[in-house]
Amino acid sequence: MKGFEMMNFKKIAALLLCIVLAAAMISCGGKPNGGDSAPVELDVKKTAESITSATAFSGEMIELPDDYIALNYSIADTEKIAVWSSGAATAEQVIVIKTKSGATDKAKSSLDSWLSDQAAIYDDYAPDQAVLLRSATIKTAGGYIIAVVSADTAGAGAAIDAAINPSAAETAAAE
Image 1 (cartoon, rainbow, N blue to C red):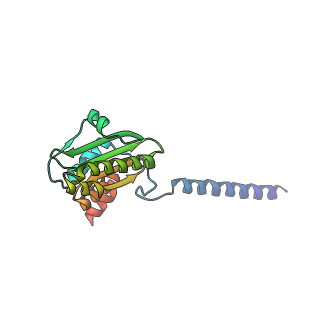
Image 2: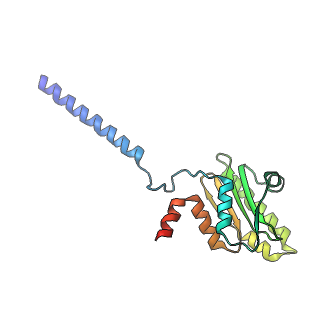
Image 3: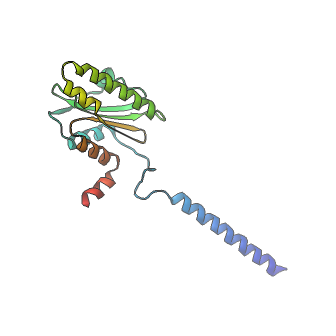
């Protein structure tokens, strides 16, 4: 009988070891190199600055102060927001928003409305700028929304992608 109990003990020990190893493999799984499931953490001011530097604009871009943003950018459910805007009379800008937890869709809808309202303002005196506002490059990642108003849509898209996933941008540049 003692041999039978020892055999059961070994089977149970082996089964427990398999369960522990399976749990370890599952918890360490996921997408390599921070794939889509990896959380995104951005510094909104530095991200806005880097996108501004990597995108072509028709004039000089300036960082807007927080108090000006609070008065003029009424975008719902934002936790933090950074804006770079054209120093000239154009609609060009870079907007980086960290949304409140779980409110990305609502903040995106609010941003879309704000951009539409701005385009309506430009319609009468600068229709070319209204077109830029309506064709803004907008991407979301995690709890962030990034919008770029520029004729350089390809550059804006690439700059946003590089800001969201720097390791992928480095890999693409090396190829």
